[in-house]
Image (cartoon, rainbow, N blue to C red; front, side):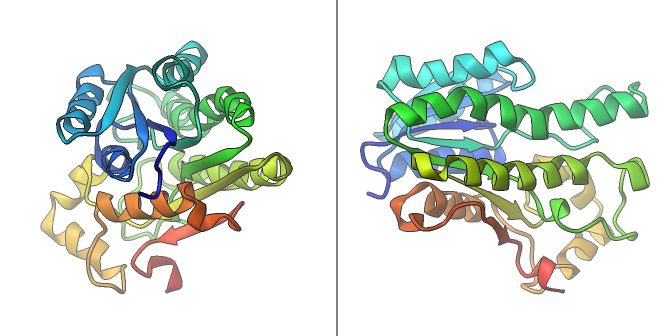
Length: 259
């Protein structure tokens, strides 16, 4: 097992990539804290893991609140005695970040608060615990849209001022800076830049068959990704198999950024 005797915290673990990652990590021997804003969703993931013979607890919380981010980390210490791996998977898009009545500034603030600042908050509380274990691994979820812009043919809320690209680009740069600052302490920090993945985050886009096909056509591999495929990349970066990898934005995008 690739994560035997490791304790992992997965934010956004109640659905999509986060859920797939939590389930895979448990299958590979990790004790998992499933953190999510939705307690019901987190519990369903934890129950799925436990019913399959793994070990998991849920921690309901909002990464936009420092006290909740601290409590997520504390749940790992209280339940399993330490922390070795963090996957910052909690994320939102402009379509689901706020209420429909929100103005542009509110949407901007909400997206950056979850995607970028939420990653910072959880990591800030996690690093001292990783140091107590002699090091560890942090895997951040960025996006291809953190390294390239939206093509004009893909609908983009707020157009040129869509907050999603800078929120994910910020995650890429936060990852690089954390990696250089923490490498000497035995903490590796990497991020994954997924292509378009079949999940709730893009459900409204792929509900339109024509737009679904446009998205597929942007991926040379000829399809969209699956949460389980991103989870496999997270497993590699969390495990000792990537012991010489830090500061890397790993493209898991079906060739999207190769075009």
